[in-house]
Image 1 (tube, rainbow, N blue to C red):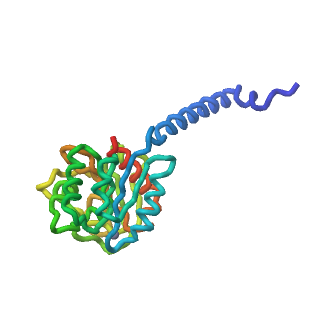
Image 2 (spheres, rainbow, N blue to C red; image 1 turned 60 degrees about the horizontal axis):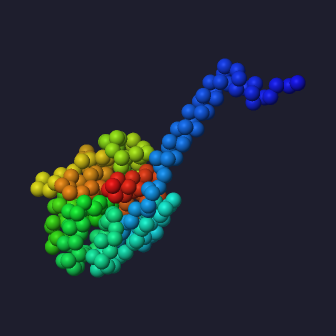
Length: 251
Ligand SMILES: [Zn+2]
């Protein structure tokens, strides 16, 4: 009787080694799967967009919402009506600001500061890291701990992860290039300061923070300077950054 080919393969020394490797791969896959699982309950996210110079509907209301809703990871509401934000803050876990249009109502501005002071997390995307509002300096000082007043002309540059161990950088390539606006984000020394997780550099000499954590005394805040258009929003590295950031600040 002919020996079973499968048994023949795996009962040889070489085959046994292969079997061990196979089992290890399955275990790694299972651990990876468990770790990558969506949270028990979807994270409630309010995303605020709208303003100038960007296609908020396509890249934030469209693409980012789609990324965050995958596998029931987050329960996302997108709005470009800044007057609607005040009433929604109580019911959410994370506020994801991407807008450069103003928050006109002073009560909304105060409520956003109180949201952070209560320990709820924030993620700040691209345009929300700009010095947008001269009449609301507290935002840049306390929430962004600085901001950007300029950027390179839209084009290709390199992002380098500087803190590989931080949960926000999990699965993000150590280096990647993309087309975007390289924001000249600068820390305001009067603010709480930041912890840089990744930097951006073009062919010019200066390096700028690209992904960072704001050392807010009460809550977790992540800034992601990338995100001008689809060249970033379609990148796998960006998807990882965004979901990791939302997950991390929600805890
Ligand atoms: Zn932009």
